[in-house]
Length: 114
Image (cartoon, rainbow, N blue to C red; front, side, top):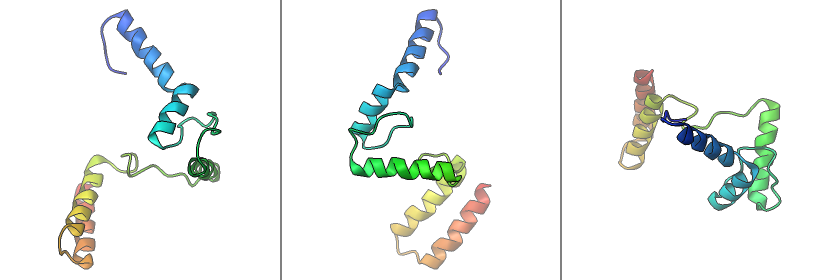
């Protein structure tokens, strides 16, 4: 949480955190966002078949030890590495850069970001 002064503000933060991770909020938020709840104990009865399959796939990956952190959510790589990859991929798709040049630039960008 953010550092705040005052007992009331700290209690407000604690309440907000409690509500956000609550089952009801997780259901309502994710139904509106089009994603699946972070909690695995939230009922998926109101979700569509795509969300249910996604939750099943995620659970199977987790149980099988093959669940990986997300590149899209900034959990798989450090910021410099992710930025280097995004820069090269963006340049490749928005120019006449050859795939061979893109691969070479990608390898160099990743090496330089370590």
